[in-house]
Image (cartoon, rainbow, N blue to C red; front, top):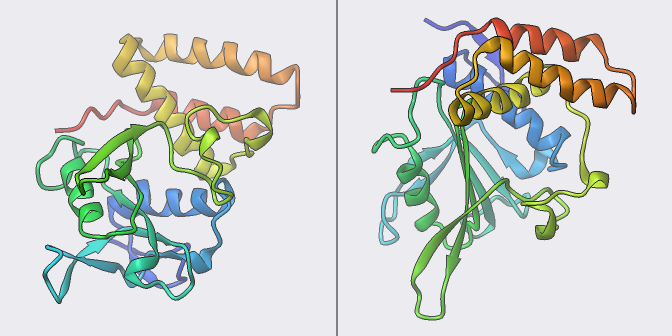
Length: 228
């Protein structure tokens, strides 16, 4: 049985499963510290539940991270759904992948944004309903921050960028590392060279902390997880 850990949002003890350690807990912290959402608008434990079908009365589907527009946390206030999986789950998996996320979004009328992540891959969708009532999902680079500036979702300005720390930083590096691996097929030594170039530029603007280099070295020594 997995050891207990403290849920970042609720403070409740939860099982330290791979999903929690690799995705749910790191991204919960990122939502607060990087995106600026207050904990009061986020629910992780107990898990918020959504309906299987719009006509259902009972809510059966548990949401890993739910972000609301009001502390009342009613269904009409649900703004963002984030599904977190362990690293070995593939985004195209019919049961636990993107399709699951989009089905959750579909039954929540005011849920505009959704994210699926396994800490290696990240997929973001915005739900758009046309005048005829047809629902479509448009892919974006990221979810909006708490200030709601949609202009910076795909192209963030330099002023909107936030510092990343510790496990949040490792989460970001893992995403970058695996994006390069999947798209360019580079080995770890070439990855490290690319990161070295990046932080050589960064070091001219500010002092690079040991945490950054520790995170990079940890990431470079870890095996690539490609999913099932």
